[in-house]
Length: 235
Length: 192
Image (tube, rainbow over all chains, first blue to last red; front, side):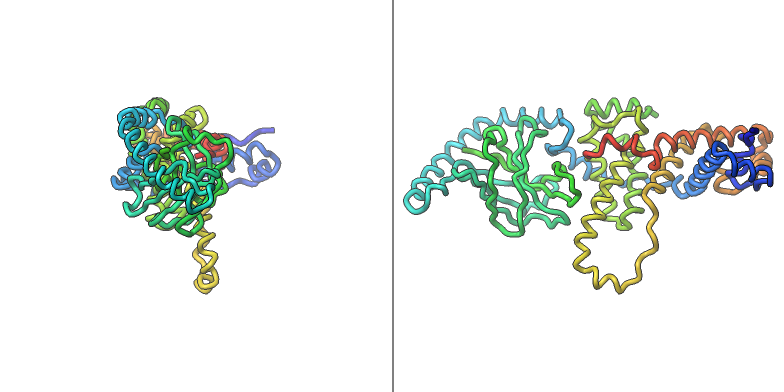
């Protein structure tokens, strides 16, 4: 069987000429030529439609600045972020004495609170760790929160002024030494104080970074990469 | 201009300047796709930002063997835009009864077609100048081969071979990168 000439197929694909009766007959019979012509026709149509795309305006600088903001934080995502990990480590070394001092102060306060609570409340309410949640760079400064880990393994989270979301807010525990390692604790219903159970066996010394993220309803259980609040648990 | 391979290598090595180059090179196409899919400038800008942030976080998943950087970025952008449409649809359900009164907008274009067009446009821009010029005259000005020969002063045989080779180049790129074949280029980065 004699296939159609490649130059001829090009002319037909560009609709520069129309099929002769013999050609139509062959195209009806021959899947190879039909496939060739279909592919060339699609590409020619796409090419003709691409005229408006030749001179797309340059992408705006303000979006680039937001991209820069987005990659400057320690975004927990599927891939390792060598850079941010390094930054974090440097910072945490620098912060260690400060954190130790803060922790000591908090322990002192927590001690007082504990005594208080033992007197007036059930022992389950003992606070074993806490964190103050601060907004990330792109998040409105009024957003804030605090976290208390109770001795019965529950975590009490108090948030305010979170930006509105079209999805939901989820709470994570992240290992700051390897931000790809994280545990989802649950989502925050629309009220100021929520108590979430911490899965038993979680090492809270390791997973000590509390993260509140904005998650889309996409059925994807992984972290969206959009963190709103963060804070480190101190004991 | 550095090649996609080189750019990918620098990106994987954690060079933020490579991301900037990718943005300069492909940001316009990503924004265009997002705008076509979302018909809302603010959402389209959000999706463009999310796309490049996700590309940075997932830079290890880009494999130049599987498709070009443009196709990879458009694949991410398409998923981010679709996520956004889905959550907007959920939010809108409450007000759906009110909106039902308003005439529905015209049938939106399939994202695959927009991606295909962006990929073909990009390849057209990369063709050797004469090949590109003859194809543009055929596509945009609807000129026949003899008319193109007359306009450009090229022999008819040369016009013919430019157009045949140019179309073959566009087709190869479309088959590698196009959304219709996108599972090859987009599959690995679903997690983004």
